[in-house]
Amino acid sequence: MTETKHAAAPADVGAALPAIELAGVAKEYHSHGETVAAVRGLDLTIAQGEFFSLLGPSGCGKTTTLRMVAGFEEPTAGEVYLHGADVTGVPPNRRDVNTVFQSYALFPHMSVFENVAFGLRRRRVPKPEIKARVGEMLEIVDLTGLERRRPGELSGGQQQRVALARALVNRPRALLLDEPLGALDLKLRQAMQVELKRIQREVGITFVYVTHDQGEALTMSDRIAVMNDGRIEQLGTPREIYERPASRFVAGFIGTSNLLVGEVAGTEDGHAVISYGPDGRIEVPLRPGVAATPGQRLELTVRPEKIGIGTRRPGGALCAVRGTVTEVVYLGTSTNYNVSTATGAEMVVFAQNATSAEDVAGRGDTVWLSWEPRHSYAMGAAQ
Image (cartoon, rainbow, N blue to C red; front, side, top):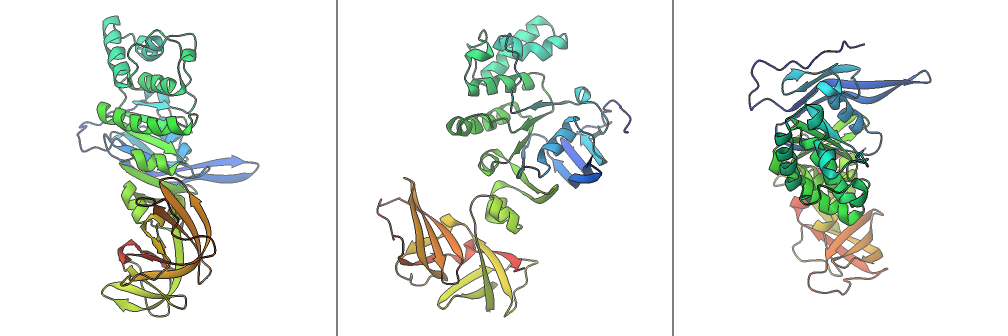
């Protein structure tokens, strides 16, 4: 049992200190005689003022990680640091962080103003300062003029903003958000994603955001940690994770990705050349750590929006694969094609309807899929 303590501030808190640091953090639960590892030896550093997302499927350990930062759970092993201070064992109310959950937990009998002011009143902040700080925060979250309303008179998005204002008015050094948009409908959720990023930039506080929605993470985050089975599979910017997935899991979980396997025929100018099917060819840039020798089976990925589709083989295309259209779905701004390649692999193509609403091809048609070699990404040797 970890002894309860107060968070001790480091002697020199400089701008270079990370807002949050996890060192070898692990969490195990014991149930019915079995040990379940929820988080496995996590090392993580989150910078001051960063919008950082923990992304992954249910049960991957992201919420448990957030709860250990907040102090609601204690790690089985490892340490949690907030701005350089070891807070392992420090209770939640003595950590300079606030948490916003999916259920906003607003006081239904209190006005918007009183909900936001609640924490300040408990801290015995002078009334003039309470009025000024609550007013400033309501302006930031775009709720000025609604001070006297009660939560039941607000929309879901407005209630979400009240919960944010209540958490931010105490000026925590970090705000932890556990799937706070999960209860909103799609259109409002998308609007709130933009609002959350705007609010975070305006207040300049570190946000740590837990979500299973890759669209949310890509939209808002400075960096993303993709988690799976209690570990971080990949850590990077949204662009890095989307364009350069480190594993099959990341490629499949972040957006839609076409995973292909082919035999290396040779190498040319830093590219592996793969003969694909009876008349297809793929080039993929080689990267450090990925070997490509003739005869080796290589796994690669290419995103659906990078692929062109047509009924004729394009001249000069260095990546070209033949297949048969199995499904066509018109989505207004784009048309999605499912294509079964000559080797039996299933590929998806997102074609923008930029110039015509007419389909390029229909079900049963033979088509050629083509893309630039730089859009091929080698995952490693096929298992």
